[in-house]
Image 1 (cartoon, helix red, strand yellow):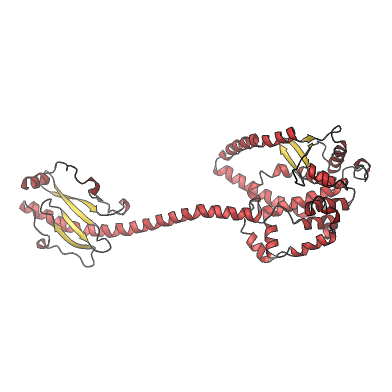
Image 2: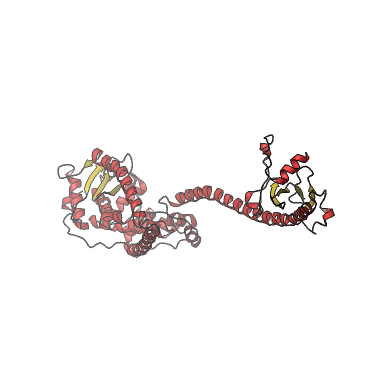
Length: 446
């Protein structure tokens, strides 16, 4: 195997790299949606959202600083003196991609993971290549360029800059995941541009598919043919809700470019996926979100329904009790008139000409001989309640009435001029001295 410095890729100038066609279209759609969302949120919160974002940014900055410090403190920075073979590859790939300002390049143990990644902290970019992938590709070191180029593609395409403010659109079902998959296809083109031959690019993806050893005997065409099975419901719905395309499709695009043809996805998969928000964890992540929302919304909905039912019942009870109170006040006025004329309370309201109206909630009206109160017994469904009309005499001898209701009644259901009656839990307390003339008169009679 030739050293990277002698390969065609090493001697190339900046390449013309064509990103995946759908990425730019999807980016424009997401930019418009997210831009309008940020504008609306700014107006609704009077700009306070940006203070919140600043606080979240600072919290995230401190949190992410640990990860970057871990990489810089434990990983090995690749330079001309440290792993010069990898350094040459990296420099050549940066030139091909067109990155004049070089990211920091590190090699780290992957503890079995076969991959690489790019990240950003403050205004500095980092590319990390896991040692396990380097070891796996000892028989085709050119394939390492694909990993380096792929991660540089994320930087060149500004994926690490745009991701935070595109957050609103990225949650939208189908759209967010489609954009994420398009980015991966685009970065595969960057990786392909950094390799001197297409076969090495295929080998790079083959390692992810078959492992660190078996990739060497992978039948590429048979693997690409697996893409014909991705049109099924479950295959389609899980890809439509994922951030990465199926690996067999990525290999097909690297191998065949725009000539790669894939089967149409199941129509029902599209319909189901349109209801699943992008969480970054595919279908499982969306299901977790739905379950979480269900656990929150069901109690809230039940509480809201119960509150609605209570309000409706209180409104109905209020109307019924108010009608009974109004009818009872007719009897109370007759009693009051009788007292004002005779100076003593009648024994019953029937003798005063009062009759309970037809279909009335009132079952009976009785005068309490000790307190001179009118007790209004009620019919179903309020047979457990009683309206009490208590008299009081003014200085001029006129009678006025106060209303109270016994039984279980919400305050909201009480008639406008009525209150809850004496709380039974307070039984045994000393009754207050009467202050009205009628009260003193009745006490004197006792």
